[in-house]
Length: 160
Ligand SMILES: [Fe+2]
Ligand SMILES: [Fe+2]
Image (tube, rainbow, N blue to C red; front, side):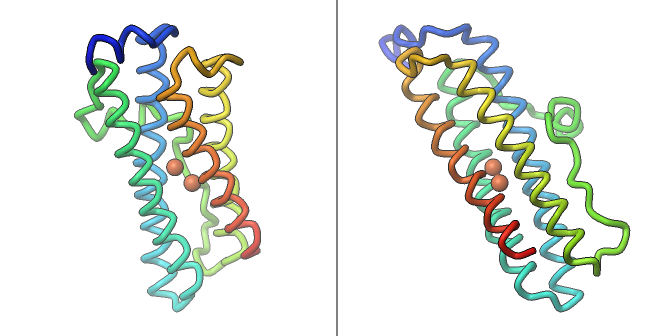
């Protein structure tokens, strides 16, 4: 990030990078877990769940990319080791039911996972403070991701 771009950030940058890295880890776990649900649903002939979980998984991956871009702009480094992601994550697991044919249970687990993501981004917004001009760029990014997580929760909820 350039000189002026850095100058206008008025929050604790190290702490912000930490929060963004944790959210980045959440996104990768969501991506993997949703792809897993999509593959399983495909195999079990649940085309709607397969299609929706697959599409939302791709959006989670996009979130990871967007967070990575901002982490690097702020002078941080994206976690390079896969095993570190689990340690960093706020939302470590999507609690799918034992029986993957339990569609309602699968969807409930996905709703809960989105609830966790919503909390994570809402907390980052709070960290950025009531005056979003402390870091406009991160504020808009997190606001954008948060509104997609809210939509994801609603999409899964509507399928129940
Ligand atoms: Fe996401
Ligand atoms: Fe999501």
